[in-house]
Length: 131
Image (cartoon, rainbow, N blue to C red):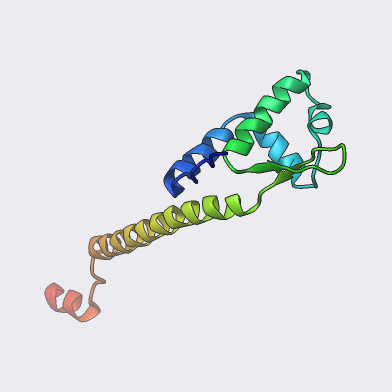
């Protein structure tokens, strides 16, 4: 039996985001946050075949978001939460970068505003000029 090599982090992230691009798969993931469920249980609310839901679960499995185990006659699907850590780290890196850019932009705008404000009139200068 040959083992499938673990995808690189960037490739895995692409698989995860691609899997979550489908609203049915996002809903399945959301439902699995409440607990493990079989394919039949997951298929109940959808107006599609169990085979179609099984294909969605296969995509989620390939992305590493879901795993299946054997529990007697049941094969429950389980949400693999550590994959969300990978996504969170990726998102957080870009969120911090965006915040840094906004902070720098705010500082530039504040300096520009300070330069645009006319200096306050000095009352003595105004009186001297009037004489």
